[in-house]
Length: 103
Length: 527
Image (tube, rainbow over all chains, first blue to last red):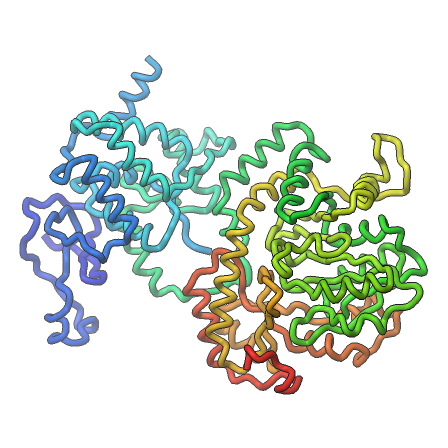
C-alpha cells in the first residue's frame, strides 16, 4: 500500500488515520533528494517517529507542563494501563442521550 | 490576528478518553494547542453532549466519575465557550442535514474560527471544517507564514473576555434601561474606587470630560487655560469649547510632558486653570504643577485620557489635581467598544455640577437648572467597561513587560528612548521613540511587516483649526521637534514575544542619527 505522508520534525503524519496490527514495524520512505542536507548527520539525528497510539513513546520534558499535568491526572483517574475499547459510536450515544432525556 | 479553532465534539472526546484507535492524532492536536497557547473554542450546545458521552464511556470502563470529572475540569481550563447564535437559517443544507453540526458552524463563524472535526460528512458540508490531518498540515504551513505585527489588536484582546462582554450586552439589553441606569452607576463606583477618587461621573468622551470640568469651574470667555504645546488637540479644544483661550507651554524634552518650570511665565491675570496631560501614559510632574497652581490660585485638571492606572509617587492619576478627565476611546488602555469618557474628582461640588451639566443641566427630569449638554456615558459602554476594568491591571502589566523588553534591548541603540522619572510608574499607552530619520525607520519597520504610527504629526498650534491664533512654525520649537521625530512602536496587551522580538530586531539594525538635542540633555539611563 503506497500512501503520501508528511515528515514533520522527526514524525511522519499520514493523510488519514490507520489502525495498525503492531505498534512498531518497518516502512519504506521515498525521501526527496532536495530535502536531504547531510546523510551522515541525518543518521545521527532524531529517529523518525510514527504518529499513533505508540505506548513506547517517551513521556518526558519535551511535553509542555500543562499536558504533563493533564496526562498525570488522566493516568491517575483512568489507571495507567487504561486503553480505550471501541464501543458505540458518538452518534449512537447521542441518540441514546436524546431518548433518555426526552422519552 | 492568531488563528482560531473550534473543536468538534468528537475531538474533545478523543482527548478525554484517549481514543487513539479512531484518532491517532489527538495527542498531537492537544499538545499543539498548549504549545501555541491557543484557546480551544467550544459552542455552548456541545457541552451537554460531551459530558453525557464522557460520563457514559467512563461508566462503561468502570472509571469513577468523580475522578474522571477532574480530567474534564482540567481540560476546560483551555476552553472558551461560545454562544450559539440565535440567527438560524433553517434552509441551510447543513441545518437540514444535521442541526447540531450547523450550530457548531454558526458558533465558529461568529469568530471566524476553523472547526477541527473527524466527522467526514460534516467536513464535506462545511466550509469551516478541517480534518485532524489538515489541521496538522496547516501547522507546517504556518511555520512558513511571515510574522506580522499590527500596531494594535483590539479584536484579539476582546476574544479573551468575549463571554463576559456577551453577558454584559445581554444584561444591558434585558434591563430595558439604556441611559443613566445601573451599569453606569456601578461603573462610576468601580472606576472611582480604582482611581482612589471619591467621585466619578461617566460622560460622552474624553474631550467632553475636560470641557465639562472647565465649564463646571465657571471657566469661559475671557479666561485663559494653560495647556501643553505637545499634546493631542483635544486638550486645546476643551478650553476652546468652554469659550476660554488655550495658552500653550512647552514640554520637558525628556518626558514630553508639560515643563513646570515654564508654566509661571505663561500665567496672566486671566489664567484660571492648568491642564496637565499624562502623555503616552506617563504622569506629568504633578507636585511641581500643583505648587504653582496653589501660588496663583489656579485649578489643576488632569488630562488622563492615556493614563488609566498610571501612578505618580505611588498615587493613581485621577486624583492628583482638582479633577481629571478620562477617555475610553477603544484604543485606550481602558477602552470602550465605542466612545466614552469620565470625570474623577474628590470635590463633591464639582462632581454634582459635572453630573448636571452632562445631562441637559438637569437634576430632576424635565427641570433644567442650567444650559447643559447631552454628554453621557451610555449603559452599554458602561457595561463593557465594567468587564474590561477587571482586566486593566493585567493588561497594563503586559504593556509594562513589552516596554521593559524594548527598553532593555534597545538601550545601546542611538534611539531616544522614553525617559521614566523615578517618581513615575507609567502604563505605556504608547511606546514612543525619537529619531531624526523617523520616516526611514518607519519604512524599514513597514517592510518587515511591523505597523507603526505617529503621535502626533502636527502640533495643535500649527493645525488649521487654530490658524486664527496666528501661531507660526518656530513658536513652540520643542513641541515641533518632538512632533517631527516621534514614532510609536507596536504596544498592546496580547502582543507576543515573537512580535516584540521582531520589532526589536528591526530597530536594532537601523542606523540612527542622533536626535537634535545635545548629549548632555539626554537622561543618563539612555546613554
